[in-house]
Amino acid sequence: MNPYLLFVLFVLAGSFVLNLVVEGLNLRCLGTALPEELAGFYDGEKYARSQNYTRERTQFDLFQSSITVAATLLFILLGGFNVVDRIARSYVQDPILSGLIFISLLAVISGLFALPFGIYSTFVIEARYGFNQTTPKTFIFDLLKSLLLMVVIGGPVLTLVLWLFGAAGKSAWVIVWIAITIFQLVMLYFAPAVIMPLFNKFSPLESRELVDMIEAYARVQGFKMKGVFQMDGSKRSTKTNAFFTGFGRYRRIVLFDTLIARHSSEELLAILAHEMGHYKLRHVLKMIIASVLETGLLLFVLSLFIGNPGLFAAFKMEHISIYASLVFFGFLFSPLSAFLGIAMNSLSRHHELEADRYAARTTGKAEAFMTALKKLSVENLSNLTPHPLKVILDYSHPPVLQRIRSLNQIPPSKA
Image (cartoon, rainbow, N blue to C red; front, side):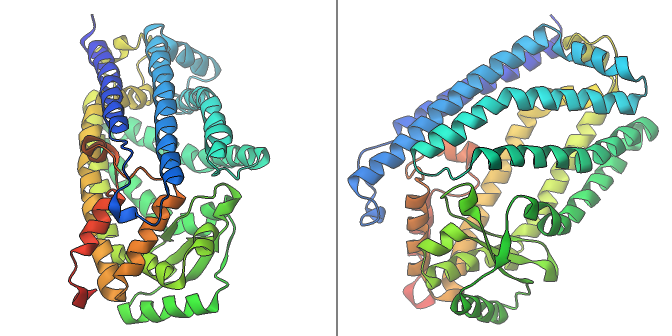
């Protein structure tokens, strides 16, 4: 059997089995005893509800994963990629245009396949636990807007990548790396102002008291920003969140309206101080650099496999092309990508703990921040006791109990 096909089958099957084991271990960690740190925030019924939510989401995700892996295997073994390629090349022979059609068709097939799962997740599971606020109209318009962005932004980027790999020879991966890096940096400025408003409404924060507190804190910290905004997160979900977008003087603080409604001004300030901490401690810059390096590694390894006959034979392809190489390489790179993901998640969790301590020290409101973390866990029905292996593989943030215990280690005089 083709060695590339064996490797792809091994990766797909191995990833599925690993996921099955990890999720099984994670479910076994769902104990009935409420951690003492959350006493007073959860009652027995609410805690049981949070565990049921974790259990149901996990079971559904495993079901979706099972169907997806089975469908992917059949698609590969039955020559599905070659059928799509034939359709693409039946319209045009130009390698760039046929590549755009090929990848677009695969994206449509993948999207249609995932659509029923997305509908069930949103309108059944999330609704059952009181989270879903998305109407069918909003759901459909989100899909259409995402499709539009794929065409308007993804199309030109893919065209450039295909052209560069076709025109620049062996050094193409370096040029593509530079081009993608520039694009990613541009998007850091472009997305908050143009893309995000397509999906949500952003308006200046209404609470003058809260705005004054945030601006006063930002001045003391030497943190420049464009403004403080609230976002209509309740349009889609009752879950809560806060984040920063943009760079330099274009940075914006964004609070979900659901977050504002459930937290005190001191808690909100502490949450935002945590986000500011990521900037002040250069976490954002470090993660951008790490992402750029990861992209460079991916493109370099990709350049070694473009046009590989054995790889194309594994997918039963009749025609060798650059555009199909991009798709097939994803299967080969996935194990290395998983290891890189573990490293990135570990770095991210370390950054989160540092930002927690920064917020506690600079605001002097460690208790308010811990209260906010506890409330967020309750509001989002977070899993309080994930298995350590699940955390290592999938968590970009430390579990809430680890964060609370880390904050408790800060001497009171410095909090």
